[in-house]
Length: 347
Image (cartoon, rainbow, N blue to C red; front, top):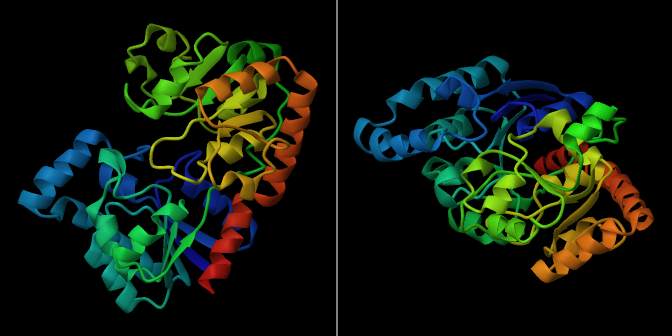
């Protein structure tokens, strides 16, 4: 199958994992990194100032000309490849008229996967993505909770598709003594700082008396001195993130506010890397893991501290659960499994 995959493309990005899985399945894949075309480079997400400029100035005053070139190039890519499937990840700066034109002129099945809620916050919010929903044949969301919202906005068909892991990347590693010293901690957290009053900051602040190391963007902005001392100084991606997991006793996860019932990427990447995952007790977790035997879930801060303290002092049980979690993730929760599900639903 010829697939045109449109999404932000960099190591550890969702588009990278989707392409890797689809290629392993024998499909022909062409990637269109729309952010690189529009901004000149691929950002983890569009810079806040550029998003505000787009919303407040470009879209309202100057029109959409600065992004028209990228949209035109995407139309050309569709025409040149003549794909069987066009698979868009987010697509927050594709203009609705671009998606509408493709739906009317291309024979390809037109599919979008929203790994974030386009109604949420200044980072993920996108009127383009919302107004384009009606033109896709199929829309995937990372949260069942949002399905009614997407349908109300005009999406023809909405399905739940969660994240996954890539066993060729997220795996057990043999670290050198130098690497273990560089990355080791009792508890690691990998993720972005989301503000002083976020749930993430509040819960991590309650763990600073443990041997905690935080890896991710912008944690130097945290105001809590104890929390800033836990900051490792930079984000980690790809294999370096996997080294952090392998050097830690526990991988802790706390979701941002847009995840109501379903897991994020770390809930699959950490177990697949062979470390014990301690994560939110979200409604979808029992459908994905045997909670208590493959991963550990917490309900509040007191419960979280008890779980962490218990498993730091019970290494054999910790390693046994981590091994079972790794087996489950690498068997049932790979991106190849997700792409097979995506293609099955496209049929």
